[in-house]
Length: 443
Image 1 (cartoon, rainbow, N blue to C red):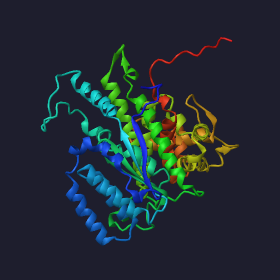
Image 2: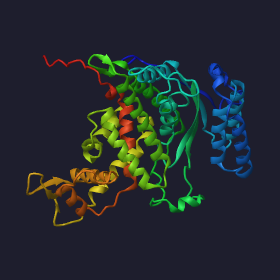
Image 3: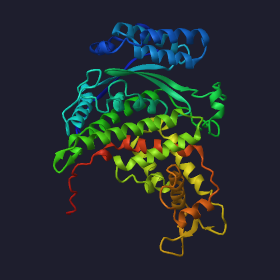
Image 4: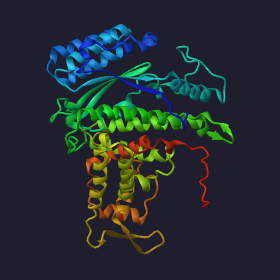
């Protein structure tokens, strides 16, 4: 697949304010072959929709929740068309630049994932059926999104400007219905009504990003670009030649990599949507940075958690991502790097800090001076290690780092995970692990 122009995801805009009155949704009939997988949650969705409409008739959040549930649960293609048509009739009066898109998923992608799972189970022992009769049940629940909806892959896009959002995906077998607002919808209220939130360990809600005005068409352009990049991401990550061990295909290696990728997307989805618990966001960020070398060996901690190296990555993104959609995709990446720079300012001991460097113990004895950026990267690793109970003996340098820093961690630092996910999506060839052609140095 890779090296070609894969079309695993095929996007198409169905309707906007100019044609929604014509009910232009015939393309949804392309999902008709998957009707048998839907309908079980339809009555529940109708019940929830009715209660939300009665209790919160004027809330956009209630409207969007209802639309998402009804779109996913619609039992037939005819009912799906009715739901989407009604949804646009309710959205457009409130969000005049909104549009709705169908992103079809080629069955070949699910087939590749299914082959990985089947071979994973069959490699050592004969397959054993699950209680519900499935012949190959190994780890099927871990990659559910590759069957229905690809939720985290498109939710990450829709929340690229978290804590606000600009789209809502509704997944179905065979495709995703994506409602794009053409502008931002407030993603969090200033005060939550959930009493349990009073006891959460965070330090307040995530601050809104300082944004310039974004043209409505930039959001639809971001959908097209993201979908095209996911085509390449999945082309590389499901390439069997990526996973050779002693010259043979290794299903374990393949499954581990596709699972790691899915977990990275889910982590970024959690960071973007869990806007009130900064402690949880930071832990998920640590988990994300730890997983990066498993996908791209060069993206080690020393690279991913370093401000200067991250600035280099951002500069490459600014060169590669179309200018039209950079205001949609890059603000959180920039905020994360600014947070890393702010972290450097937390080294407060004047006896140690001078000329943008800090004096720390050297592993060979004595002291050495290192740049504040390097110190901040190492300090973050020490904090990350606390999540594991400092399972290794801390060095004198680690302890000196803890003593020398004031401990303040900017909330935006959690978006380092988004920066590096965006790096992979923009440059999916990083996922290719097979033999690379040698570059000639001859004149």
